[in-house]
Length: 310
Image (cartoon, rainbow, N blue to C red; front, side, top):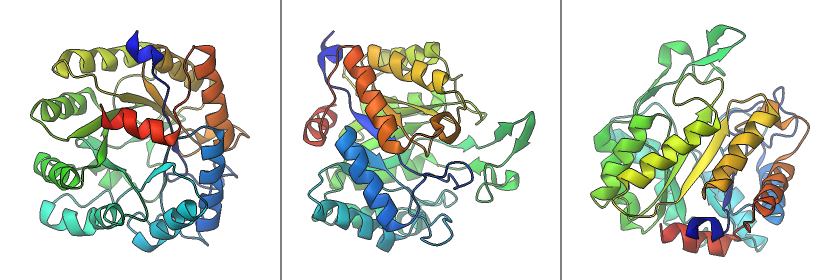
């Protein structure tokens, strides 16, 4: 019951690789991203994850430090303390290259005290990224063609990056796409890496990985965390993704909040289920759902405290 008394932390998957054709309100240019982040923060979000995108074409610029820096600096200049973190390139797995070419901008942003990053990402295992739609297998966009579907995250790279993050005393968002990723993550947690872990598991409708996007899967992951975290109370997030049904998304969010977890919402994750709603509206609805279930929503400062204590 203690977890249920804690406020809910709401994260936003702001844009990911979603196109304007998939959702007309997805933010691409830096000024659009800044405005959307500020609106989400006002609605109750404490964490925003976003992809740098080409301001003109909307194409992915996953490792563009300058674009991330511009957005983060403008958000801070507006007096907003919401936690922000970037993504990184998916297809560089060798550690010697990965540290500089894949994660270099993440570390550089985290090293800038004016940006106050606070939280950083790490995808906790390899997976075959395949998308099913209309009975056919396909990539979601040109950045993920089927012949490059294997997303490699060697264990050594994970360990070395966790050490880099711990050296900076950062909260680490451990992204889980498969149950095995969670087992590996919790083994690392038991071994002392990272110092401030939080788990985020994705439950997808179109991506052909992981557990089914249904409430029982939330309970399975939560049970795994309870059993394998070595008596450590570990914060976790449920992130519905690749779902077309608003009702299916809401069902997962309700289940996670009722079970003591935290949630991620956003056009970037569920553009079809979002319908005509913008990111701030999705945040506001998650906040109302938390209130219905008897939990407050954590502002950024409280979210930092909770997640660092995880």
